[in-house]
Amino acid sequence: MQKFMLVLAVVFAVNFTATGSTPATRADNSGLVTAHRGSSHTAPENTASSIRQAIKDGAGYAELDVQETVDGVIVLMHDDSAKRTTGINKPMWEIPYGELRQASAGDWFHPQFRQERVPTLEEIIEIAQGKIKLNIELKNNGHQKRLAEETVNIIERRKFTADCTVTSFDPALLRKVKQLNASIRTGLIIGQKSANREALFTDRNYEVLSAAYPLVDEEFMRLAAQHRKQVFVWTVNDIKTMNRMLKLGVDSIITNEPAQLVELLRQRRAKS
Image (cartoon, rainbow, N blue to C red; front, side, top):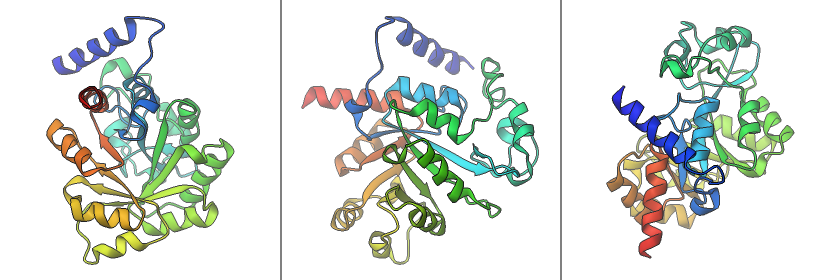
């Protein structure tokens, strides 16, 4: 609790010092800084507050997770069950949007966020437009019906194609996205070594490999460059590993500490 209040105080002080001041801009950090589930150490994950905080922190991207409710609404949620973040002890595919919307999505994190609600993807894109890009992870819970289709519909309706990357552990979902709209950039998430490592780089259904950072080394980066794949790494929260990933030349670092990474990049620029 003390750590949370200290972080909150620092954030408040930075935002309050000058009404005309702005956070580090997206251009300053291009896509190198991705806030994991938004700025999830300062605000409840996958909420409007965490996305707004990522913008304030100067992140170029916010990573978020999307699933379907039983009535087909695309909402932000990481776990298969809504219990951890809302108290609703049901799997996502059994919850109507109206029931989910009534629950607090922030009280578990801190009472200050008691009024936070589970947002729809459309609401988050409205917040993000012109301010931050989105890494939209399609969660395969085994019960999705039109997750890829509805996500693409929302992206197209909001004219957000150029400002997002759609990622997933499930190659079939990425293929579906490409079939629906080939101009949407996609990325395969990988969390463990593959028996056929090189095959990861030759698949044309995605432009990005989003890899657990221990998997990424010089050979990984060489293959990525050879096959024109971008490389995102997750989830990096310490300075030493951030520096190592930057030295390797990754395209984006997914972190729970976006403000810390923004500051590291500022220091590196000052030295160059």
